[in-house]
Picture 1 (cartoon, rainbow, N blue to C red):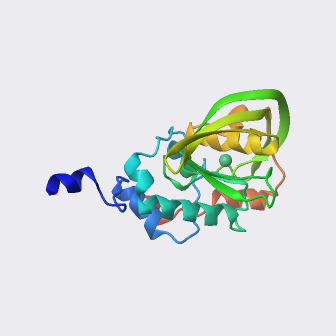
Picture 2: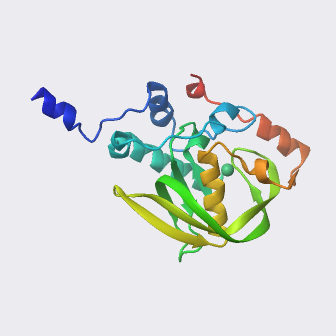
Picture 3: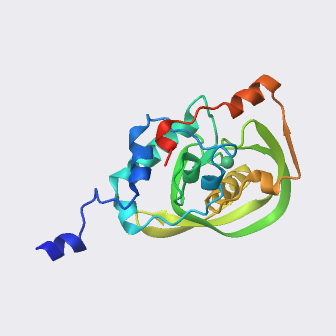
Length: 208
Ligand code: ZN
């Protein structure tokens, strides 16, 4: 009987570390967003694929719901977010599908960019984790991505600005920030706004 339990763990089974559980569970629905100025080691660590146990876990669903609340919160107002930006080095992102009717946010697990195609386009970008800067970043116009959907591998081709968002978010999963690729980095904000970005308060739960 014990063997059966070990082979078929319940859906609440979760191998997330105790620190990761606290980060996900103890914060309100809008999570602290790690910034380059305070949490560079998390942002620079390549993220691991979600294990099959993590994919089944209720904790992952909680993380994904809170990531969506965070990226759509008026204080952030982003078009995408990656799990390392909230302290969790796993391959899960939300991307706003500007190429779809209604521009919905969609979640992608164990996502990878398989190939890049098309011309290179230079456009301005920002990042929730690198406030208050902006930068001009060259990106390919098209991406071919693969990810898991209900446990099945799916491949998809995306073009235009949404392809740029996928490139930005997938870079986060590899520890790469847009400033690594930008040809110019600048700020539009006042010195006071710049100071406030550095004074962003890091909650106690983020301390390991
Ligand atoms: Zn970013």
